[in-house]
Length: 286
Picture (cartoon, rainbow, N blue to C red):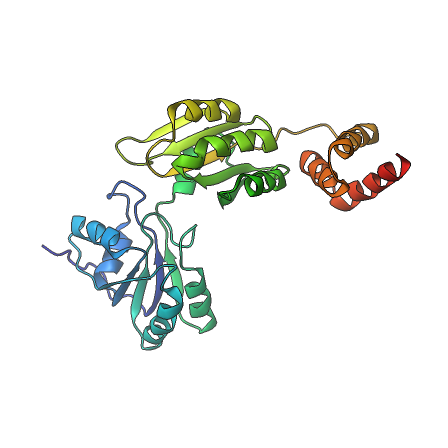
């Protein structure tokens, strides 16, 4: 039995629509109604979306839209929008454009003057943030960290001074190493690892970054989609000039001037121009 349409036909345009991150019931009535009426449903993977449609007894015309065919598909989609069609964009799970394809399509649709709106709903980022028991008044979503350790450590160092809770996505096979690198670059902050959110085996493990790294190093990477939430840096009393000089001298003794400046900036949060000028003075006096 197909779903009964309960509202008037939507206005022509592109509808960026959130889908469940696990539990198939976590979808809005508006989203179900829209998918039942749309002219085309763009899916990251049509097989994944087909399962959701089947659960909710919806019949819809679907087409794939992902990183590998996006450049080819966008002109076709824009023509259909120009013809007055209702087009829905979904990802495999959660909210499209958040670490999923779709940004260029939205940009081009907006530039062409088409109606673009969103149907909000499930998001693994917000779900993990609400369960982490860490500050939520300010947070920074950093997506997936680089796969290579050197690049990953550099990125974490750049994020160290951000006065907010940090949210990352991570793969199971890199989780332990990534948590250890976070502890090294960010300090041993409180954190939480959330996986399989809204599903039967949902788990949220909380502890310090070093504790979590040790746990997953010993137990191995967990199954399922993983979100890592890391608490903000502790508020420090303002550093005096002697303390900054001591940090710079220590760093200059171990590495290049450029890397020493980057290290001290990430630790203190002070302006790079200021730290660089002082590093030049100290290196010249040595």
